[in-house]
Structures are given as structure tokens and as C-alpha cells.
Image 1: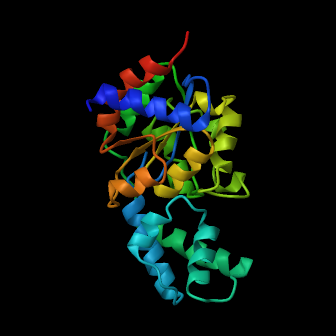
Image 2: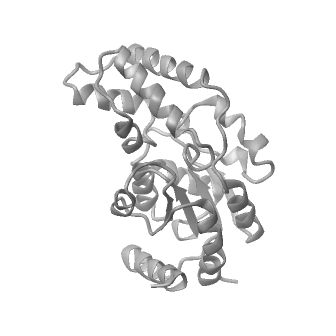
Length: 249
């Protein structure tokens, strides 16, 4: 199946799954870590270190598999899995603050290769852009306008502070849709993590996964990705066909 057939089949499957009459893309919601910034190796390392300091079993694989959860959810999940008592709010705040300090000490995080070109191409295609992230890392949030000037609607970003339930719950992407004034069938989600893909899928959005990390492709397709690409530039090359098949005048 060539690239154009692959996109057409993905749209056909999406419409069959959701029951929507058409896919009419008007906006794109980007995850941040692992999509806009190459921050996941540092997140994984800081999570592993802070968990070890608190005698909680946690691996780099765990970090990638649970990417997209809020910090509090990640800590509570890891502690429960180890049979530890339910974490208090004070304990969660202390552990997460330590994790953030470790992450911030690692220095400035580079952007993902090709993410700026993809975002620019989407804007040129008429899509409005914003961000839905499980992070509250101000060091990254403050860099968005510097790294991606004028591309994202910063007043419509959704962070972990805006929701009660983080990814894989659909609430973050549903809130993103509301902020953008878009319906699910008008929304494209760009993700790299299985829990984020689950959240985008469950929100009713057309969800594209870019595998920027070490996970097997199958993890992302099994999580519900409508399309999967290896790089941002690969997706950017496919974008004109996707918008041609979905945009309605």
C-alpha cells in the first residue's frame, strides 16, 4: 500500500470507527515532550533517579510507557505498583519537585528535528495550532514561543494544571478542542506516546503518532494511532494528501 492509499484507508477506518460523516480538519493539537522538544531522554533519566532515591522501582521503559501522565499520577501509579501506601499530597509534591529540579539541571532541551517545519506547513495549510501536555515544566513551556515563534496559540494551551484527569483520559484533548472551538472530527492530534495516542483516540480526534522514542511501532498502533510516521519530515511530506482528502470548502 503506497502512501496515498495508506492515508485514504486511515481516514476510511477512522470514519467507520467514530461514525462521523466526514473528517474536516481545522486545527492540530500537539503534545510537547517528545513531539516539540527532545525532552524524553532527560525526563526518563530524572524519573528513574528520583524514584530510586525514594525506593520506588521505575525504569526508563516505564517512563516512556507512562509518558503523558501527570507527575502526580505517575508517582501514585509507581508507588501502588510496588505495594506502597497511597502517597500523600505532600509526598507527591516533594517527589515531583525533586524530579523537576533534576530535569532542569540538565540544561536546555533541544527541539525535535523537523517539528518546526511540520508546524509551519500546517499553518500554511490553514490549520490553527495549540498544545496539550501533561507537563507543568515551566522551563519548556516558556521556550515554546522562542523555539516556535508565532506558530502556536499560547492562550489555548492545555497543561496538567488545567485538567482533573490526565492522559490516557480524553479530558486533556477534549479541553483542547473546546479551547480551539473545534469538534473532534475537525481536530488532528500529533503524539509520540502510547497514553497520549489513547487520549487523542478516545477524544474522537484523528490521531497521528510520530515514533520519536525507543518504543516499538506496534505499541503506538495498538494504542489507536490512525497513522504512524517515523519522523516529522515524513509526516510533513504526507500532510498535503491528508489535508486534500479532509479539508472541505
